[in-house]
Length: 362
Image 1 (tube, one colour):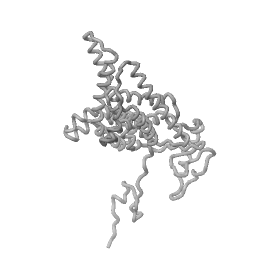
Image 2 (tube, one colour):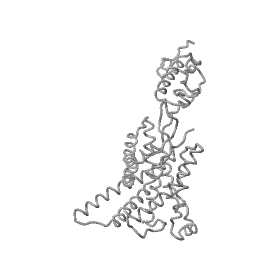
Image 3 (cartoon, helix red, strand yellow):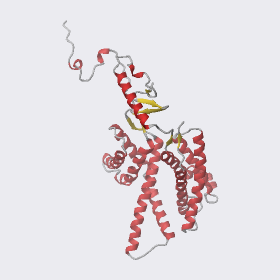
Image 4 (spheres, helix red, strand yellow):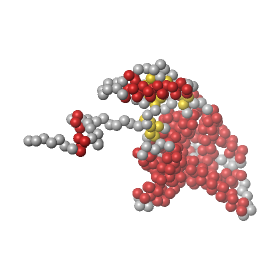
């Protein structure tokens, strides 16, 4: 049975990520109890308190999923949401929850923390990977060669009949229902053609994470320019004000990322399907695809979507690479079944029968 790996440092980092979100919510007043003290100690304490609680609840849920052998992506998205919402509600300012419920804004008020929790859950699942039994790499290599030879002998069989390749070769044998696959030491492997999966959950998660990471990147770059400007005119800034400036800049760019969220989803999807149509599945290809998707959309709309597309470019590039990581690979589907009425029609495109018709003297 496969399990998602348990990495306590990554679990702690997942908690810290939510702790940072609580600090941002507290500083900007997103319904949570506002931070009255912007000192470094107060900020770090808030991050640690929220982060440790999130990490503890998430770890308990993760261990429960491991116990039952559940590795589905949506379960970790749900786990992250279940961990995030109670902590966010606990940190709400007095009367805020009742006010949101009374005005019918409870779903919208809890939507952002739910998305943050789901994104953290999916990110942990992908980064932790799947635990399995230790692989015998040398034995696997031998098994692969034997299975490939067996498949070659099968292909040489007569039409409509299997060749000798379906017999077992000790511990290595082609799988009964997978051509191009083989089993070694109880583990099934597949060496056929692959493509990137189409996953709505991964698409939405990639757009959210892409927006978050691009926001942080832009914020750090802007902060560097801001500090350089202050240094050039001989001024300094207190740490508390520096945090407020950084968070304010991140919030402004985060709001812009939310505004461009739907275009980013569309652009990542366009890049994904375009790359899949030409058989590309590498991370570099997805990064370049995300970069080219934005100007392509601007051209298609004759510049009407130009300003919005420009704002979406960086989140799309980051999100496309994240999507490639989250979605993973799947086998390329085989050709669709052909329904034939006449066996003479079953000839190749370059066959002489398709170029010349039969002459019947009447």
